[in-house]
Length: 95
Image 1 (cartoon, rainbow, N blue to C red):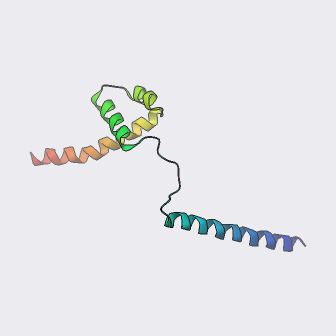
Image 2 (image 1 turned 60 degrees about the vertical axis):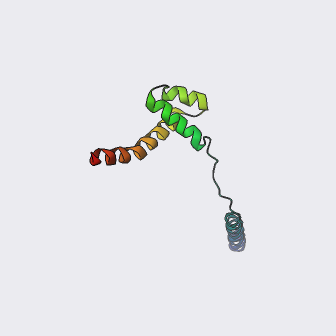
């Protein structure tokens, strides 16, 4: 008896898995993507990086202004620095 119940449960789980996969595939085909929407747009991230790197505002101030955590601001600044570092290295090598 329990073996039969187990097999029905396994079958039902497989059906749920198939329906979920089909729904996700359809959503992707329609251009939708999953996940959380970013809280900051590209312009806001650029403003944060520029303000912190120039020294006009601290990371804590920018975090309060935009309603994000300090680690988020630090990640943004680190990303911008890592992207601009190869450019600076390239310019140094040319001289």
